[in-house]
Length: 194
Image (cartoon, rainbow, N blue to C red):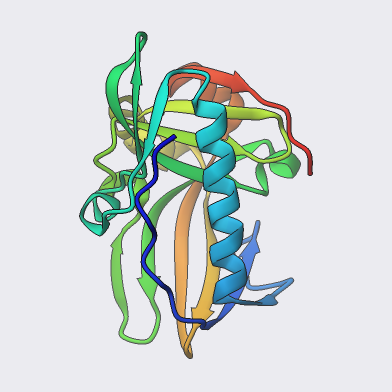
């Protein structure tokens, strides 16, 4: 797996909260550095698992990351394809995938589309942490299903705060079995050591 060096990040404080009911509860405080390290570990785990499909090239270029592309995979099955990595820690308990459809900056009342709409990657490697599965989601198939999922599944919110600015992410909680049936090209069974 090839990697381009990550740019240095400054340490910030972040407040993270996710609630099934869309309310802020069970709020825990994390440093930005802790969340960055956790994200890098998840990225490394996903990339290592994806290497069973072919050669994985991690992307560190911000231009690609703004497009929702975390890596490229070269494989016999997929050819050369772009992938965005996602991890969901609640999936084990809920058996749902959190499909992010909006992000809201509460300070200036700005709302933007979430990763489900914005990503330009061909596939999403969605690690449902604790389930032993990484779902390889066909992005185009997922985008086609979003209008139906919007009608069928509840909108839930996750919250974060950094440097005094509060953000919320809205997502549809789609059952993993529906994600697998309707939009997955593959499901990797993985061994988790957590």
